[in-house]
Image 1 (cartoon, one colour):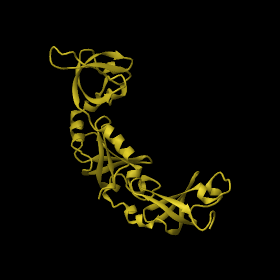
Image 2: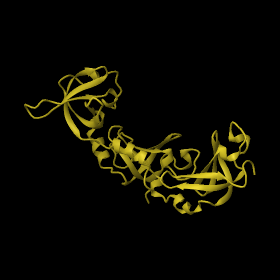
Image 3: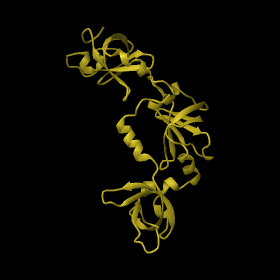
Image 4: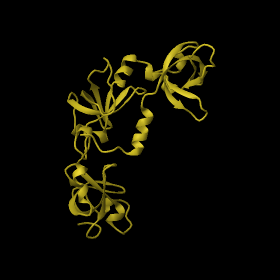
Length: 273
């Protein structure tokens, strides 16, 4: 089951990362570390001028793009967009490995794929996606896309060598990577919690941060109580008032399904219980 409608801001970012059209261009020179190009078109037409920014030149390490390209060379590059001056910007790295590009273009958003966990880090999980070109690791799962519930570390959910099934969020030809989601294939627990607005609950605090506390409301459902709801007295941090693991009585003020968050208010007075 797919997750609810995505945050419009996130969807806007994803839309900017979808692959653009591929154009054949000729290298005409260098501007600092950028590659200057002109589009190869029909004879007699004035060729359009474009630019390949240094970070879009190649996936390989280099000191300067002149190590990889020479004036007069024709290459394929993906359109990125037009900058303020109207000049076309392109990405050569998006077309650098044809087999990789072909593989990524086959992975549409929403497609369910299988793979094997390669590495688990505190910032996310790398995955060998079935069918990817040999020698590459194309899959990545961000921490927020691992599970609906609260986790301390990605290793709470997966481990290296584990076979997984995930949903494609987006395949990026410019990064050579496909962003995946495990939780998109699971029911959003907030859909069954949405009718709890207005209820008063006593539940444990699972995390204290400088501006408030997170409260475990139900399995895989966590709500946030702002510091201002804890007390009217001036305090620097919530841990002056409460401890992790202790129960607190809260009121469910809002369940936001789109942003997947629960806003809590104080109930029965502020402060310790």
